[in-house]
Image (cartoon, rainbow, N blue to C red):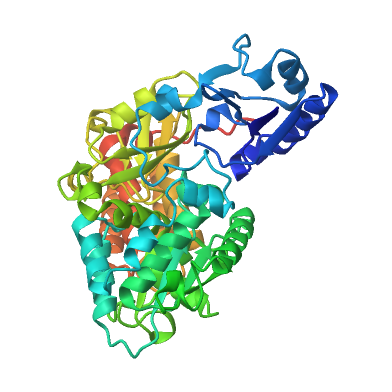
Length: 519
């Protein structure tokens, strides 16, 4: 009898020793003359339990974690291969774990369950159903379904995806059109894009192919963050297999319509996450922000109509086409429809990925899923949406995860990254970091961003040193207003948000002298 064992192969699990765990499992099984089938699945997103080892049993997939390589011999001797419950690392049926049970996984329904590059596994779990449905629809019908879903960009701006697609569709059909996936995931505390690419790459391929059929594009590019070499490797292999099976190429699903995909590594610059800078980089140029108009939907890659969407936006498309736009829109609240992949990071006890319908409160996320801080100390501030978003004090944590609700507070959801800080954090240093980050990562094209960020660091240093604090606080506020109103793109325009939130909600930290650096 062959026992199926699952050990994740994504970057997080690998960094925690998953390869060695897999090797030790094979050796231990051989020593007991047990026949095993080792599947390298993707992570389920329960990062505090990685490496997570799962065993297929008649009663579901029983899990153990976090498993160290030197624990394998004892685990196997104690009955791991039979799903034995008598061990401290035993977690039971992982699908029933409270962390997973409370979620609404639409986009991430397959991660951790399937072999990422096994196309038969993908199809067996509902894969390509959305593409097959799109293949019998007109382009306008596909776009209308995306509009009905209420899907908005998951990269930061939250622009309605259906309107963007409609703009590209309405451009003359005799033009070359492109689909570009922004996978240059650079925000602090974010890793959902990486999990899509490493744990369910066919989902992204399917979503991009549907987008191509919808707007008449025949070529797509996935612009992958330069550090994500494993993502690149898995995507390249998945694209090759999808082409061999007729899901990509000159005759997609027998429609007579063509769509091809290529992966490109990014330039290692945060600014290339901005869509026009990304397009410049794809064209082989320096990643400088373009002035708008014209919009990329009209004149994008190589001057042609281009859909530019984030990984999570495109990854939601297969569900929408397979189940209907209304089924997706039934989740969420207000204008924030569907689900949001939320990434828990920073000083958090249970870091990982969760997917929930819009409307859940930040406090519920922090308490029910994050389980408090890793240090056990009280939380002081939470930053949602990346390094250019506001720091939120405790009296804002009952706010529902909703684009409009967060905007009213001067905050943002962005890419869904949630970074937690305990009460030992120096918020003045966090404000300084925002300006310093911008100074380093600015493309330099516009003066408010290029010069304002440098001046911002200087002004904050003077305030902390007690140098004419009152006047420098006024100067810092005016500088922030100039950057917000005068910057060419969101890089300079949003850098003041974390600074202003510190000035408003944590003024005592800004007025305190810098803490001495510990040896």
